[in-house]
Amino acid sequence: MKHLIPADHIEQKIHLLRGHRVMLDSDLALIYGVTTKRLNQQVYRNKERFPADFMFRLTPEERDSLRLQIATLKTGRGQHQKYLPYAFTEHGAVMLSAVLRTPIAVSASIQIVRAFNRLRQMALAHKDLAVALAELARRVTGHDEQFQAVFDAIRELMDPPLKPRKQIGFTPPGKP
Image 1 (cartoon, rainbow, N blue to C red):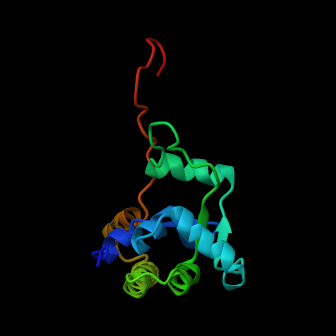
Image 2: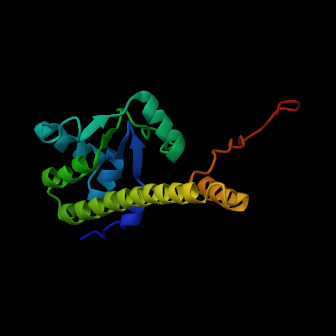
């Protein structure tokens, strides 16, 4: 039997698309120990188990955006994806275990659920911390400017500003 992929590695495969946390068909195929082609065949054969809130096909723009973020492009002939990938929500990812019927399916679905739950808990903890900080800042407001500076610094750490990335490659002289 194949070894399970740890939940923290699965978390890295979860993306936020269209306001949903999703996993791509190729990542799920790897976790379930099947080819992407077989996974998609089973989904096609069991369409009634995968409503729109369980899975959706990426648009070309979404695929290109993810390709830039996670470097999915492989080199060599026949290595590029011919079809737009599917994205599966947590429920769709778990439903796959019912249609794939591989020896690893049940264990893998448990790991996937744990990864989604951990991300959900982290998001709630982040939200709770922000609410508590806002309440504390409201109570201290007007008492001391130093406290306000500390609150501002903590908020900045919670939501770091996006820094423009330095372009890689050759930059012609005279161009910033």
